[in-house]
Image (cartoon, rainbow, N blue to C red):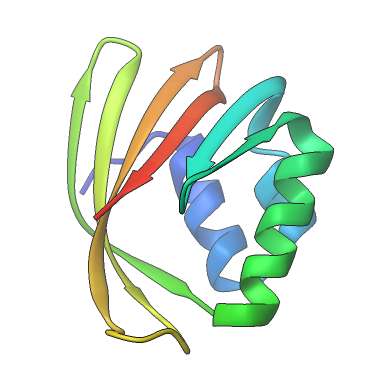
Length: 107
């Protein structure tokens, strides 16, 4: 599967539970929508993923990737310490200049 570098970097950061590297995949003004909450900017995203990592210990295995211009959808198997693990989730990305501008996680 041919993934953009920023998405490969994000997956590697997630699988290593590295919240700083994860947040560095996003622009300063990026927005993340997950579990009914909105996270704005690098620091908020870093705090969100660090909390999520501590709570769920989730790892990602890419299953499918579809790209349309600046928008793309990664389907990944996510495994961790959460009910229903593993589960396939969809990660909806808007990427500009090699950085994630927006991410929405759906089931």
